Image 1 (cartoon, rainbow, N blue to C red):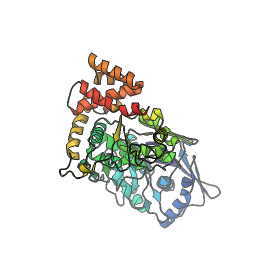
Image 2 (cartoon, rainbow, N blue to C red):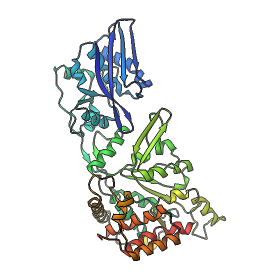
Image 3 (cartoon, helix red, strand yellow):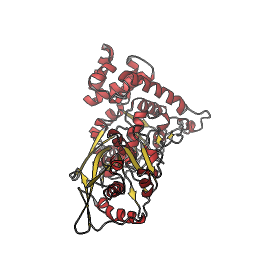
Image 4 (cartoon, one colour):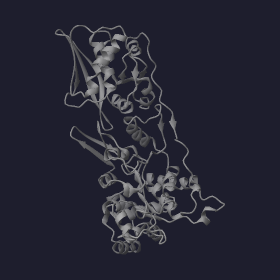
Length: 504
């Protein structure tokens, strides 16, 4: 008789159901696992055998065959240990078949039968809820999986605990979800002296999820400004928190099963590889752009990143999705992030200072920023020059505007956008609006449209740049609590494109 257990295989953030079929038949003693297992899954037979020996359960001298169905779906990871063990125990009539078949399980087994936590418990719980099954997982993964309220999560410390639970000897209580955290306290914008235009750009970027680029000499405060952006962003909505946590669950980044309402802030080094930024490697894991989903991706020293890495950002910025295509895997991850980039004006960094600039100025500046392609530069809604801070500004006695005050205005603008586009809609911020949605959200009167047309011709804006100016103007109007876009809103939005025109 064939026993059935159930688990999942991960394709991006999607958990695909997998049926574990176990047959114990007469023949030469053997233990084989079929169904496209990787090395970790193939080695499960040794871990399962040792774990059963620790429970004083000896495998019979028969042929044991484990089939992971569907057989054409690649199976990767050590989380198949537990479902294989449960299916085998059911095939040996130690566990009731129906109890095993009514649950989805995942977990790695130690040689003594202890359950080791694995990644992906949250997506697995969602897949179990869709199939109306319970989830059995290691104790350390239970708090994370329990956030799916429609799924009963049973978390155990050892394989013996699960055997006792399924046989009714010692029933385990369903697991409770972990704590909701707000993240560490962000750095305050009041610490930044001067740089009022850059602060204003960050406020606009936070309000409408617009991409921003800072260009300035070393020590001007570009990184300091970017580090204070999380402090003015609104907390994640429940839907966004679940989306982000699913990606972080696959990456093993959830802390003790808790879900954070703080938006991610990822700042990879410029030596990071393409697989680290975009995703890939063994199993096509999510990259930094996906780990920054619904949050901030900060790329310091942007021209120092490899050109091939920068060019791969162009499509994800536009679509909010990245397809990691490999020979044995095609996986899609969400990556709707706010991109903040910082760059020096030239290699030495002192292009604007005649006394400190190198002998190749101004050609060195054109060559250095020329590493950033025009199509990528066109995707930045806000381009801001960050001049050196005057010593007089550093000695200002009174602090500037605090992050809490800016965050209140940002929250009001975000609330206006939610009311405009609808809760749970595909368009969440002004940066997502396009086509008819943008036309309805940002109508212009005849005078304003004439101003935008003249500016577009003079600045040489592309069609993409034209629409990005409209989106930024709509966000500026939202920050002013205005129903329509006025000329000052449009003029301010256009001013953030002047740096590109000057460079070209």
